[in-house]
Length: 85
Image 1 (spheres, rainbow, N blue to C red):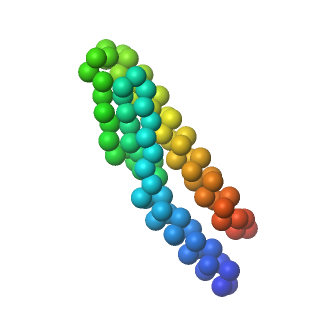
Image 2 (cartoon, rainbow, N blue to C red):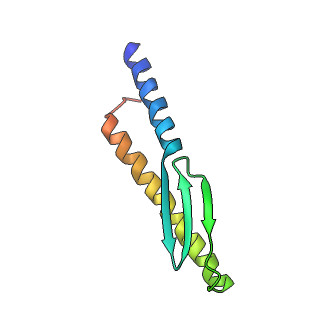
Image 3 (cartoon, helix red, strand yellow):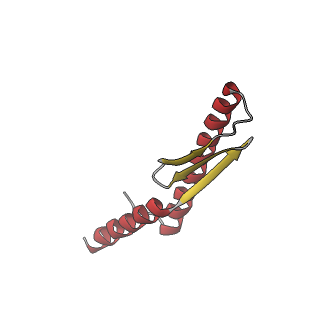
């Protein structure tokens, strides 16, 4: 029982850390900042690009940022060890 409570506390602490974490992805002057909850916080566009180029850059940046958050989460989970859940 105490082990489960300890694990839940660790998971809560990890969630709190992820809320504060921010990742950034950039392509062709377009930049996205995403938090650890995979919420986009900021988008910076490049006015020198055409609409199609900006759309592709935004999509690529968003996908890259999601991958970065997922990698960070996987790393944090591996540091915490196996919970047996």
